[in-house]
Amino acid sequence: MKFEKTIIEQFLKISNLYSKKNALVINKEKYTFENLLNKSKLIAEKIIYYSKKDKIIAICTDRSAEQIFSIIACLLANKSYIILDEKIPLAKKRIILSKLKIKTIIIEDKKKLVFKNVKKLELKKFQKKNNFVYENKNLNDIIYYIFTSGSTGEPKGIQINNSNLLWFVKNCIQTFNFSKNERFILLPYLSFDLSVFPLWISLCTGSTLYYTTGSDIIYPINYIKKNKITVYCSVPSQINLITNVLIKNKTTLNSVKKSFFCGEPLKNSQVKLWKNFFQKSKIFNTYGPSETTCFNTYYEIKKIKKTEVNDITSIGKPLPNNKIILKKGEIYIEGPQVSQGYIDKNHNNSFERKDSGNFVYKTGDFAKKIGNNYHFLGRKDQQIKISGYRFELGEIEKIILKILKKNIRIVAIFFNKKIIIAIEGKLVISKTQKERINEKLPNYAIPSKYIHFTKFPLNKNLKIDIKKIKEKIQNEY
Image 1 (tube, rainbow, N blue to C red):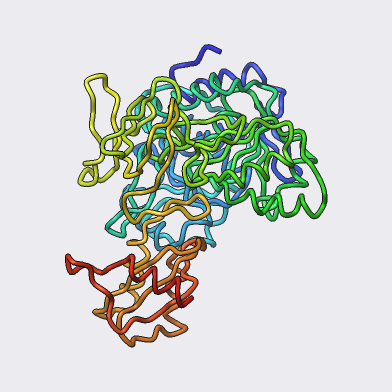
Image 2: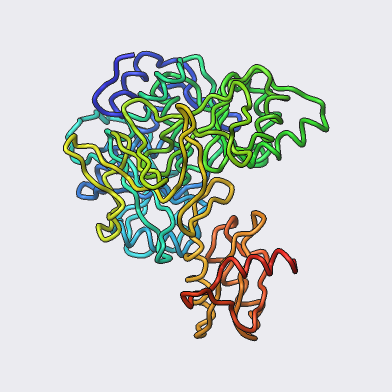
């Protein structure tokens, strides 16, 4: 397939080729590529009218068809977009709006939001007349922004440009042989970068995107069966949830032909479970930080090998035109999918521009190479992944300390897939304070337990000995 120069022009080309084919299915609604484009044009027209000088538009909607329309509309209007959906706490949304200096947001209902000093484009009030004509003015090369956690406790904004996304889409289509006949399921929230994979591959191939809502997000078994999904993508932790139900029902799902896992280490035991119930599906483990556009490496699991490290499946090899460099075991990724950096240039010491024009990103992850494939060994810092979402333990600590307003020491520990807060001293956190902490954090980062130490153990450098704290938690809890 010959690709256009921009991602939006590729979508327009596909919309013209497959205008009557279903592009999006959500709940009981179906939208052809023609419908999808026309709906998006209505929003694009309003964006241009009300936000001529704005470069970035925030999309503050829940899971809906309008969310997809709004993404396409932003690019038609030569704007970048940032998704601020229901998974992002209000306090974090305000930080993001401030960092990006956003002046325009797209919302479903003005009454639901309390943001000040921004223009609110309300979806239900968009006119039905459509006189929009797309013009590529090359005003903005950035396609979208996505925020991950930072070591300072403040979220870091990653900017993904047209070249990054276009290379990712092209690489995936060519490597995995996707066609217009695919049926992609969209499980992740659009604020999570794994959503980029099913969303943009489907829009750029003429495939159909099935956007899940409600209980189908966590338990999509009936949804997959009913809609004959062919391409599945999720974090590995969802494997256990799905297969537990399949075991009880003694069911197999044979419509799925390709399964992709990303966002967490994939265990061999999880692969075995998946193979039992998705018998006709190829299985791919993928790896890559958000800074490298969704994922950057892949490994097709044809057979579970004894050489796997710590029961973790290999992350394989890089997608075409990208490469991995190991420096003292740490992963550096170079190639056209690597972002040009964070919006705050003070954080960009992990990025380096090469003479080729591509960037290299220092991931903080460690790996080793066995044969032609790379094997993930773990992270360098406190950054963790919970249900596929990347999060910094320091961000949790900062939020808690800000609410407590006490000069105490606390440590956030990730133990048995739960977050535990260790507190030095006798301070008791009240029920009201815990409620405020929970309001500031996304659901997946809410602490499950608070434990007290008279004094924290120290290591030889007089730093808090995290290893000893974990040992005490393991022995006592």
